[in-house]
Amino acid sequence: MSHGTCPSVKNILLLDSDGKRVAVKYFSEDWPTNSAKENFEKVVFTKTQKTNARTEAEIAMFENNIVVYKFVQDLHFFVTGGDYENELILATVLQAFFDSVGLLLRGNVDKKEALENLDLILLCIDEIVDGGIILETDPNVIAGKVASNSIDSGAPLSEQTLSQALATAREHLARSLLK
Image (cartoon, rainbow, N blue to C red; front, side, top):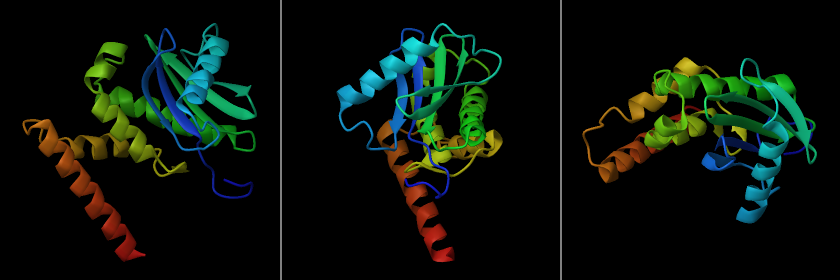
């Protein structure tokens, strides 16, 4: 994204207390290879792990990027934007991700619950940001959309995923028709 356009996010990271991936999504080509992405995650984790970002979000600069982050239990939440992005907007995205995950996991925000509900967390990221563009920051709306996409928990995983894909396609089609 260029300067002067709508705010954008370069990545959303959810790492464990050892700096290993739980859920990550990149929206930028700044890290073209998987090893570059893993290296960035390692640098960010190493430089932030000694901070106390448990009560409020913290902000840091890494490699010409603004990173806002917050920790809970054994999970580390990160949102990255370019050095030209507004920190408050990135912090709002982080808080939306953090609160949405908290709602979806019913307050049991730890690595075990996150891994058991990884599909919900990935859907949550998709509801917040699409292609780097911020779509939604209200945690209740985000959690509601994610929960409605996974209402049929009795369905086999393959059918559930297909129904979620069809619901998303219908939603995108409806949006494009309304423009």
